Image (cartoon, rainbow, N blue to C red):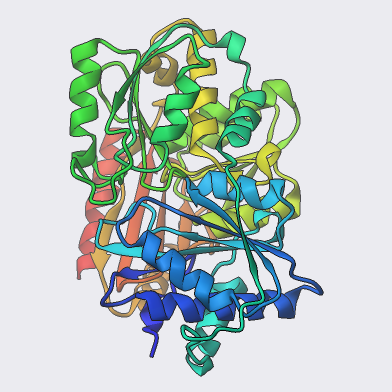
Length: 454
């Protein structure tokens, strides 16, 4: 019996081996191929990648065993980052793929990210829950000797690096001093190769892939995981610090003072830069973003498009509306030129271009964006999430200038706004608010916190 709780909104993930193990992955592989066959006329090639987690190799063997009875070509791209996995699906013309990873989660976790052709992510709504519902009707085939699939190993790292660099104006990047913390994740080998192509001095931290994560969790959203990076930036008097997550699809930036940079501010910077190259295009920003992001997109001649949070819905919206670039608060940055997928390495290179062109410190480049006052995300454990959201909307609806239900509840007023959205996996509501002045922020935050705790 495969644990149904491992099937999440955007991926499959659980603790190894108590929640996800070889038998589960074997069955998921079979169910995934069945799913693709139902959605496509022909399924010829499947790409499989994996991260450096200690359980990834055995899960890879189970996955291959599970789909070996299908008459398909299995392309093994070995250990890799998730963005490189996306590139492989597109570059090799595959019908889809499976990436063995638990992204930024602790070492005890593992899981799978699933894609269709063109690296189209499969979410809960677009297939993961469908796969979950058929999974336990599948019989294990570990001992099956009827192997139809062919297994081919392909090294695509150099092609991937060349492709990313081809999208970058390398000659624009000055000899900056950069500290890069790879968190013992999968971006390490990519950074080593890219460093040889840049005029920058790159000071590496924890760039050797190690699934035990001996230094810290590879989750740059947690500030405690940035301690070593901050210290090194200050010690080296570097121009900035950069931290990647375990599978390399998220990135966080520190300025020269060791201060963490907000993800929505990075979205605004990248949007402005990309609109210089391709003016008048649509730019996606997500629901938690500061007002300044929308303002900067408009000022740069772009068309702002608001989205709910989550990499799968963001990618879907970008494809359906042909959006040039999108940014998520959590450090995912999405590029049309890369096939509407997130790529932390590309975000890094574009930020280096921007800092080089601005010819001033990173903090000075960011300073104009720090116009409003934000609460940061505040979490509340609430069992009946929908009831609480409805109660709050009734309380404020006559005073709001604008009400949206794109992702939970967003209400805008003359001098402040808030978003209250439910967690996909926990009995938790997440509150973000922003105001034009500090007194207003304090007042509204206090009222909302008391309301949500009552």
